[in-house]
Length: 249
Image (cartoon, rainbow, N blue to C red; front, side):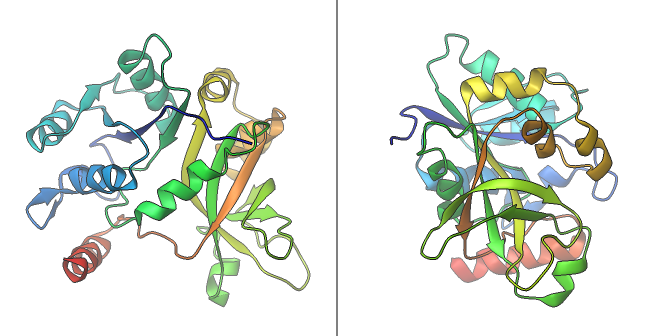
C-alpha cells in the first residue's frame, strides 16, 4: 500500500451565503477567514495549496497574504464542481494525482485532521478518503444537522470502509455513532468520475453529496480523528474561532 505521491490541497470559497454573507472575508486576528483556512492547509504540509474562488474579492485577499488563488465560474452547484474546475486550470497536465478538498469555513482545523483524510487513500482500492469523530454527546446522535458516517471499525483500527452516510441515527442498536466531517481526499481519477455522475437517488433524499459516490459503487474510506473542527456559520461561531486561535497563539 502507498499513498499518492503528488497531492494538492484546494479550498473552494464563495461570498454568497444565506446565513453569513461575505463569510470568507470575516476578520480573524487581522486576517480574513479564508486566509486562516489557507494557513491551516499549509501547516498540514501535504503539498501545494490554492483557493478556488468564485469572487475576485476572495482571490485578492488570498494573494495579498501570499497565497495562490484561481478564479472559477461563480455558478457551480457544489464545492466539488468548483474544485474540479480549479484543478483543471492549475494542473492541466495532470501532475497532481490526488486533491484534498478543504472547506473554507474551518479556520481552526488541526492540520492532523487534514492529513488523516489523505491517509485514508493508503489502500489503492480507495477512491475517496474522509474523516469522522466518535459522538460523545447524546444530542448529536439525533440531530439531523450532524451527519453520521456508518462503518465497521474493528478493534485497534483507525480507518474503515464507509457503508453509508445519513442524517438519521444509524446504525441501530448499542454501540458508537460517528460524526462525519466534510473533508475529502480524492484520487484525481475519482474526482473526474464523481463530478461527471448525475445526482443520486439517495443523495437527493438525504441531501448528502457523498452518497452519489457510494451509489455509483465508488469506495470511500473513513479515518477516525479525535475532534470535530469548528465550522463557522454564525457570528457566535466566528467569536469562538477567534478565541481558539488566540489561545493557540
